[in-house]
Length: 352
Image (cartoon, rainbow, N blue to C red):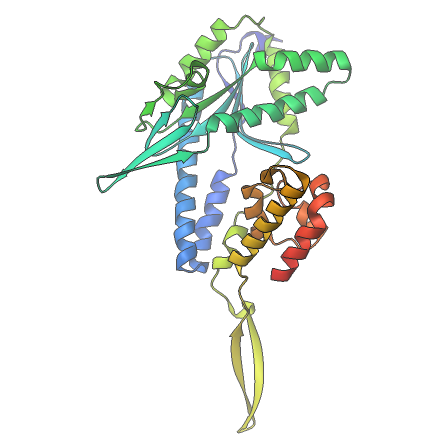
């Protein structure tokens, strides 16, 4: 019991991440791609390296916080069709902090509607573009954590208490880890401003939020059990990071269809090489989008409820031609597969 009464520094219960393994796989892929594929790959590598650097900065801040807390890094949660990749979960005696790391380049403005707008400059020309809200992304992570937490309770009373107390005990925060990024949130609402901070403000934010909380501090043993409960439901994400680049691979001898034509010339055969016809991705995209639109109108739903743009990309990337194949595509569980699977598979088979 002495350990639980003398904890003074952070403890990383899970420190590893598969990002470096993913980075190596991508770098090894470059010699096998055409020019277009290499261009896409290099941008993906750059983005991944940005992400790794950003998470390292957060790790440094947490390790030097000198606070008794448990930390989980790179946690992947799943529940049915829902999934979440969470950068950091930080457990203290009162609160759990759900950290979304963003190592964004350019300057970020948050307007009064909560939209994130990035401004970049190249050759003295400024470009403004909207970026997906990391606050919304982190809220979805939190919603899935809540669902898993509530479902783990055994009776209606504990389920009800867990649901009621969840928002109070869990704090989502977006951490901008690029020190060169200028954050302009003067027009953002207070509740939005409070959820976006810079990496060098992280430890102070945790300490201040902890002090302001009216929750009763739990024991160090209970804090460990709390953190361990999420580590126990973490799943190793099995993803093929290279499949996205299949259309850009340079054909090898094994990928070329050999058609041998007999020529009676000194009793020798002359092989004639023909490449397999490439998949027409543009037509496939359009047919899937048309199906989604027609189906959404038929059912009077928004188009993204049939499948999102991200799931559309996954369909084209994985090319499922059976229901089992479709179930392996992220975002397609039994419900969607049973409802739309036959139609989707028929479309995919036309292009496989």
